[in-house]
Length: 208
Image 1 (cartoon, helix red, strand yellow):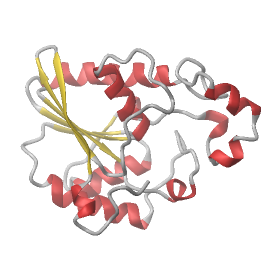
Image 2 (cartoon, helix red, strand yellow; image 1 turned 135 degrees about the vertical axis):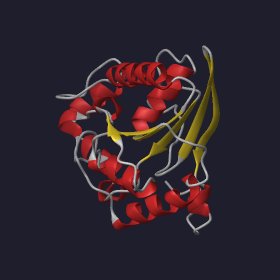
Image 3 (tube, rainbow, N blue to C red; image 1 turned 120 degrees about the vertical axis):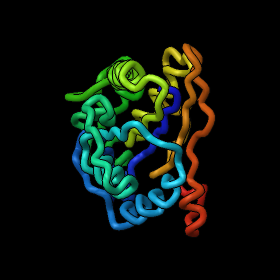
Image 4 (tube, one colour; image 1 turned 45 degrees about the vertical axis):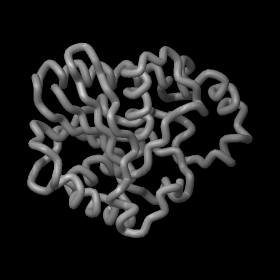
């Protein structure tokens, strides 16, 4: 693989209400579908793509199908978001009253969420996916439609950040596009959180 394009899924109702989704299979909201449609107009200009991959969760698969019509994405379990376990479906305000949340927040990279994963688990599985994709696709261009946490952990691994901190991370907006260029063992992150397709349609580039 010479080029990797990473795309976050479109907006969901749980995103709007601030609920942790993780492995919960929440579909795109109408606004998320509109974002994916705008994305499709942008990615139509991309160079030839060997394969479109997606997390198997509905919000990622639906984004991929809208953005790349006629190309059924190859679903890979390793591209899922973090499994937040017992915390899924809850808001941050609700979780701040749960002592288990406060304990997990002390070290979410190495400590699994109750009934779920640690961020180290997420990093390990997404880097395993990347190694397989690079071996399979040679000098080609691969697209992965996935999740914020998945993209963040992949960036951390590529940049050699051994233990990412919970509140020190790269922001990844819904349907944003990021590009990584590979030259042998060298990985160059050349574009992050590109949302020009949303800005062109009047969305606030600084909205959460």
